[in-house]
Amino acid sequence: MILTSAAVIRTSSQVKSNKDQGDGRLDVEVRDRPNRRAFIIEAKVADSRVGMAACCDRALAQIADRGYHRDESFYGYRQIICYDVAFYKKEALVKKNSDFH
Image 1: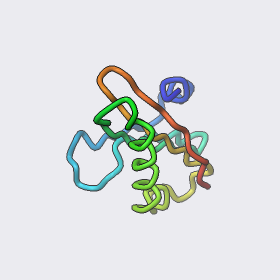
Image 2: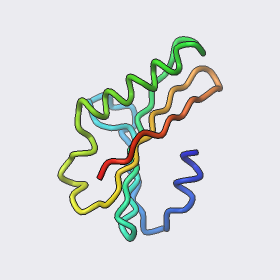
Image 3: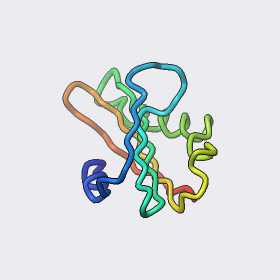
Image 4: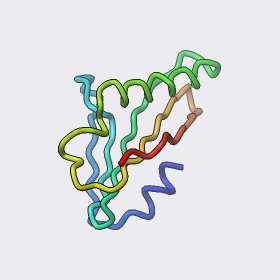
């Protein structure tokens, strides 16, 4: 799902990654400037397959609690789409959250 959304973004996009810094910033952001859209991706690692949904919920809570979508650098973007991703071994669970404007 993330790849599908990212694939439609033109080459004038900007992608930034936190690269495991663990300093409280979002994990990945993709900015589609021509269409004034931004994608925020927050990822977590689960301890089990059963725990993947809870990890996605924690990722959503982190986006909301830290206000990543309200960062002043997103001013002027019409749409901010958030994805929560949980990984367990070679499996992934991806949830798309409500769009922020």
